[in-house]
Length: 400
Image (cartoon, rainbow, N blue to C red; front, side, top):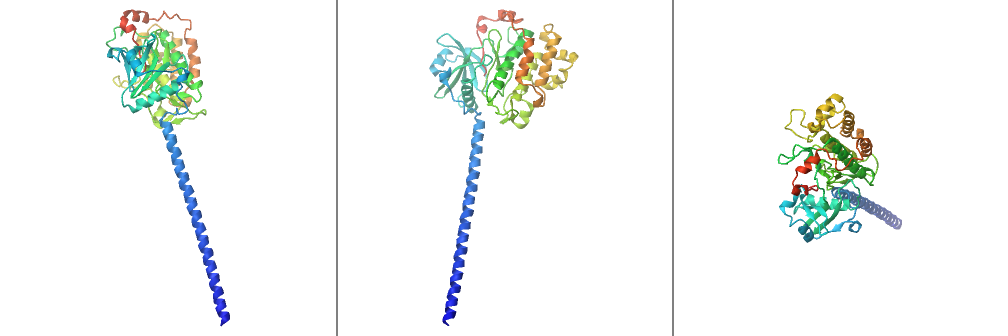
């Protein structure tokens, strides 16, 4: 009897021990599962945070590594100073408009002529463009880029101050408005070639001499500004993006730009590269050749989109003459036209890989431009300036 009791007690001990081991194992397993789940959730949240961070970084233009460097040449203005310089932002001093706001002609206390860009109140995109331009242009220095003199960020007022460009934008000279006193006078061939070269050098600097490269993203004829001698500078960097560090890469971003200038692969995928700018440059080159806007659906069928109409004709010697701006008749040699047309054809290729680098474009244009040309010889513009009133000669425009 006593032995049976002992055996029963021992059996109960073994069962209890097994139960304890099982419970302990389950507890450890539960802890491991809980820890694994915690790690999984933490990792997922971390990835989501990183993605959101990258997205915000992308939307802000990838310029967070460029800090405003006012000590490196940019001047900080007060709103009162710029109010005074522009005559109280007088309507008579307005020289341009854009999505950002209005641009005013002004004179600083030291007598320097400037263009002042005033951001519209409450414009979100304008605020972002303001930030990008200040941060970017405080680091870029090239004679082919419009110089940012300084800025004002005073309470709700945000303004950018640029060098004054006496002859405004290329677009207004290619397509003079009906109210212009000298509307029948256009840029001559030599001046167009020089503008093409100088604008190309501006993009070459952004693509080849800055690391990582800068992609303009809104290169167009209205953003090529001309000084009193019709030398060109690239302007308006509000939509600019830092490009990829590695060759052949791209950055993904919202599709922004101007109709007719946007590269097809960027419009379709949002993949932005320096070759996107090359396409836009090619469109501007076609404007210089043809005197036509990039998109004009009022034209005959087949001629509404400039690139589509021109591309099949650019490599045909007989057909290329048919696309030339009538205002240029007799000013150019066919050899030069064929060379420029070939450059344009390469730049607007549908496949980005087939487009040249801007450095190649510059090298191709250099032999065509007469470097010793006198600044007093401006073709039709010697007459153009004589027809302008003193007030209009003093006007200019910064990119709006």
